Length: 200
Length: 161
Image (spheres, rainbow over the protein chains, first blue to last red):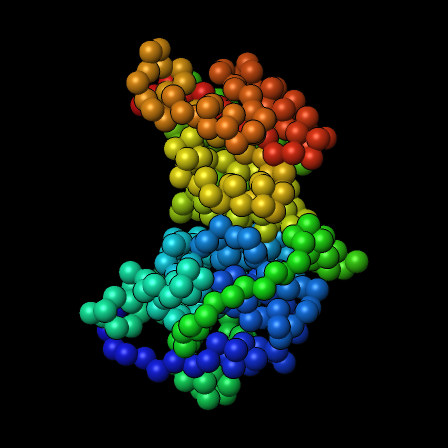
């Protein structure tokens, strides 16, 4: 684990970098990314995993990747959610899926519930755990960590083209006032998403 | 109680399942070899049962026919993931669940004691298979649930603690 204080980038600016790069990727969002990504993108291959079982987005993305091996799947996860299901790192690698990118936006807090710190970001530690190291230990070979927005802007395209599965962790700033706007009726969203996957 | 894995795989293949997402126990664990050798079924191993429901959800949304296969202790463990997938997302994901201690007379195993009440509380349609002779009930139940577009569980009774 690293215990140093990391610089952090704005979440929205980090997400904006993905807009011209997403192509026909399936994008699964949860937590903070699920709040911001719909303001940036209304693509039919976006699945805002709301309501979710916290920690389940990487697994749901893996299921999509296994079902649709011809598509690349990008999961935008939070650090608190990642901590809830670290075993999914092992599961993803063991599955053999190569068309999956798992991104973790690490802000050190449970933003959805008001900004309480995670167990990984205690006052003593003052920063989160080494998610990139955990991913490597689980067997990911394509792992990148970004603390700096300029570096992320420069290297994002390359990072998304590394051999899959890929694990990317970005240190992002905390948002003080978390307000999730309605993503719309879930049934309609799922129907639209399934139709897009089926190419209808 | 030993349930023949090859027969189970045949039944699941006939039902059109494409993926078995599992974390085994002593009731379903002996099926591993048959599942691995199946050309019709892809075995997906998870570290914790909650992952199984979410992976199955992704497979289902992506056009496949997944089956979750876990122990009853894993049913308890994965409650929130199951709630989300079956009731929030409304996906009719079926499951085979090892029913620990169900064949042990006068068992004090609380995993056994709470299994059926939990399924009843969640309103999940289930049947219990208590011997290899009853395996056809598995196919009957899943066909019924599929026709009704609803989730369904088959509990596979075992007798070892």
